[in-house]
Length: 195
Image 1 (cartoon, helix red, strand yellow):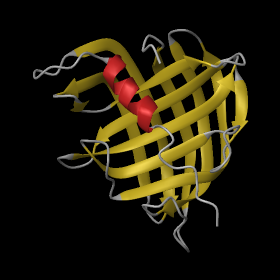
Image 2 (cartoon, rainbow, N blue to C red):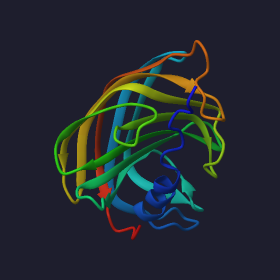
Image 3 (tube, rainbow, N blue to C red):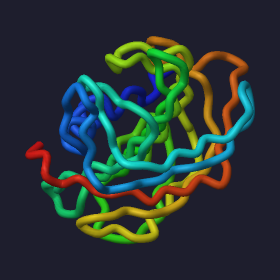
């Protein structure tokens, strides 16, 4: 089996965190609030809902927030990566990442787990504060992301789909299931990261 697209946002997430707010020991913040929410079922069931201003304390995510990173695509359009974080038990956080191919405006993008031309959606339960280990990782293998609005300051839309849990090698775990429904995002856009 081909390895699923996994860890698609490692560099963009680090850049997002670095650019979304300044970092110091007191937890400096930017003033741009974002939100992301959805319901999930399958191996685990619940809701994920974050809203707030990006905040880092000592260089790691603190509290809950959602924000987007954009980067101009060489062939035209803009790549969009959305990241959301909520406390998941010290020193861990639960994180969601949505990675979109180059877009020039409102669009509907198919979700898949292996191609660079489709959207990638990943849910990480128990991501450690150094962003290099995770307790449980789910990747959507089908679904849609609808970008309703995209501007230089905000991106909004909806998402849903089905997927599987993946192991540390990015391989699907047999018999695992994960479904996201009623997903919404409304996030500030960071395009000043110089990537």
